[in-house]
Image 1 (cartoon, rainbow, N blue to C red):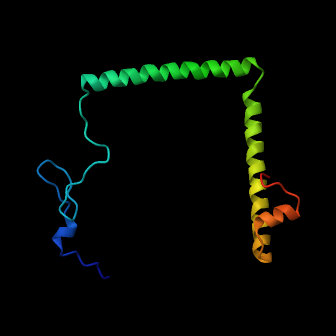
Image 2: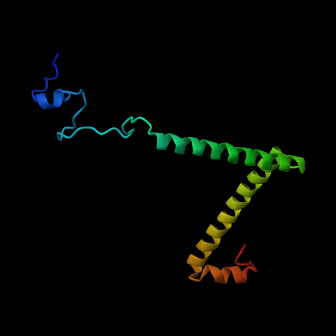
Length: 125
């Protein structure tokens, strides 16, 4: 039974690390983590974060108030979902119609706009 020969190139078989334990690329460059460094917060950045949190809580409260107003007016989430689904279906049908008109225009060597006029379609349709 034949065995696979072992690699003789030691550069390929050894993972490179520097004295801090960081990996080096085959090009000899240190790997830079996409996560960035872990720095401690400065008082200014902590204040900014706290201000952002307060602003987000205020926005959340506004949105919850708007939702409650819509519920009080009789809107229901289920109806909204049905409406969204019908809009998606309408857009798919409209896109298909526009593709068909585009192919007809190409086959007849006319502008799509001319086909809209021929079939009594508004340009907004």
